[in-house]
Length: 530
Image 1 (tube, rainbow, N blue to C red):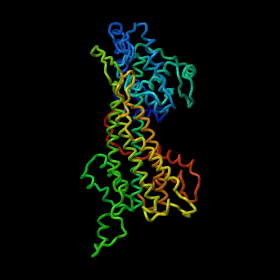
Image 2: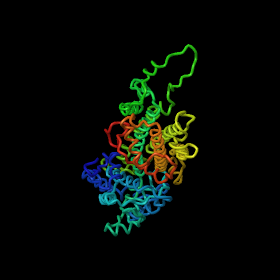
Image 3: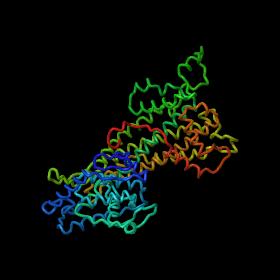
């Protein structure tokens, strides 16, 4: 929970908003609740008392299929160090530092539940890394997301030990050099601590915490783009009427329709259905009228298409809120009942299935945006705008023709990523992990879909703004659409003569990621993670 510029971690009240606040603001730090440290100490004391008396997985046994190999007490520290060094073998490009930092926060909060058997010293060491923004370099390939994010989390543990690489002050450096510079001693693992650091879903849950915020923003932008598009075609008001959506009261659909009604109240371009029906007289014989009686689905069905994504986001946000405040390692040190519980809370299917659903919804959002772009650029479809929205000399100038290729290819790229990744279960670990979640990979794929969605929406808004200029209707737009149009024109002037756009286009994407706009929410902020 946030308190000023501090996030107070107690293991139970971390919100998605807290994780995002820490990532987006270097001035935000984490503070540990004293009550949580008390529980951490009790679990550690119970573990230390019992470790020499009972067979406890990962404390005095080997790991995975080697769990039947028993070790002595003197070997327990070496076992933990071997676990980290053997598992910190990820390959590929590093995941974004924001994702690594989010994973660290979630892991710290999980350890603060007080059922992992770690020492307070490890807790404060991890806190120092977070607050000093010493961010371990985590390669993207490695984890299957079932005994948790073993490989990716091992790179975090490795950095805490003063090994491996970290990002610090914008540079990739050796962890030992950074710790030496900051006069921070490398951490020496105690019994079970290596396992407690890497046995859990913190990477996939941390990444998805950030993706939920992006999804929320994309929904808001897509809704506002839909409002502007509806104004440009002089759409009818009944497709977003309160009465219509009350007849099919899915929460997300109702919410999007209401937002559209609210935004369009100041528009002078929407048509009233009843007024239209009074002006068109029925003929004695069949004849064609020039008016469009109903808009195509990408204009008329915006609440019905975006609404399910709002509901998916609400569901996933709630599940992630539960996940980041849960015990996700194994075995659980249940000091309250004086037992060690061996189970599978590290299995990532809740996160993996949820982020896959969210990814698919955002691909549908991308398709919706691309289809509206096509409508305005294709003269054969809209029938009244110049081809590719040329402001000057069609034939000599090409207008937005090239940009449509980017929107089409980027949408196709997302469609190729649509298959639910958590279905790609492949047994591993000597068939001990025989059904796996692939949760972190699912989240990383979803992040690519999100980046693609920003690109396609940026192209749609460039298209809509160009249409506004051609039709000269800015003064009649709703306040919302005027603001959107004006913000875009600050960083992206109208395309009159053809020009090189490669440096301008990223500025539009950055605008969409940073512009201050009220959000479309899946549900009220009334529980952790929502």
